[in-house]
Image 1 (cartoon, rainbow, N blue to C red):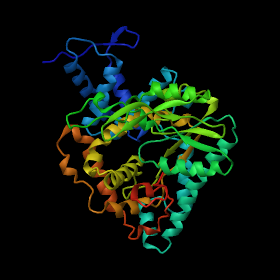
Image 2: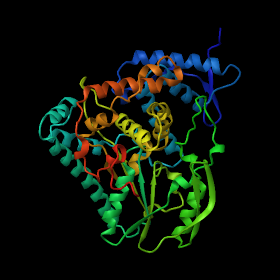
Image 3: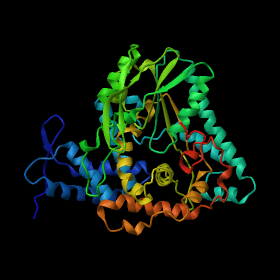
Length: 445
């Protein structure tokens, strides 16, 4: 019989009594962010945490981080993915506050930009597109293009608003376009550049992909996969050195990353910035403070783009923004990167974990938030997915694939509830949705 853990080590190194009740409360708070109200389940899960800790730390004391790791693991392995994500956002946010990376008043425990979400809800209500059922009615009507056009105008207005804010600040030397995977950063960046160019301002991209560590520096997991999704997958120190020198008017030699070889070659190309040029950082982790620590805040404009598709499914539950982005990425990986869809799904836990820890906690540090979600896109994504969506059974029963299994079950059900748009040629060629379904006028960029 394993002895039950009784002591833990605090962050300051002091030893204190282990309190399972605190674990229960932490799990319950995380569940409450997702409208969970079952304290009994939280207590059962906390008991499992205690058991895992007792088995893992027989001869040593766990610290706070160890305990939090076990809480995340326990929630995931028992199928509480959404609560695990809420817990991870809160944990990462508090860590950011302690490290001085996030101001206390900028920390939102659940990572939800409520003002933006309220704006989206009002728009959906005004356009009678609050539910999947109503979206299906738009598909069946002869006015689907009206919904499409209105949704695109809403997005375009967001981009224009961001450009106007940049133009009002002549001190801006660095524009950051950040956001999670498949939110539409590429097209949004092109459109932002077009608007600034009308007033003599040019965005010059510093491609952070060239700053990746070489492939042989990564650990490989049991599935042959690597975690490229963390900010630390990039040479953050070199990015900051180059940014600092560029803003002083110097020319730097940036690296080149050969993705076929998985190798970075340093000092391969000269890069400098003219007086009318603004450095552009188009990066998943652009809001991560250490990424641009060398640049004073007054010289930075931070734009965040998310996919806030606030629709209720046929059961009355809100669809999940991350599911929309996962569908987008599946299509892009399959059609443009020759990656099988099931591999994209299996890798998504790396993507999502990094978002929860390194992107979402920093949303409220952005100067402006663009909604890259489109009210009409689910029927379009369903058309392009066809019959290729993975069978959840291939992930069933494997505890290390529980994330992929639960997402596959949920998204398959979502796709089955949505009517397909038969003719997707009506989607404008400059829509950011074209990043994922093909045919974008911006693909040449």
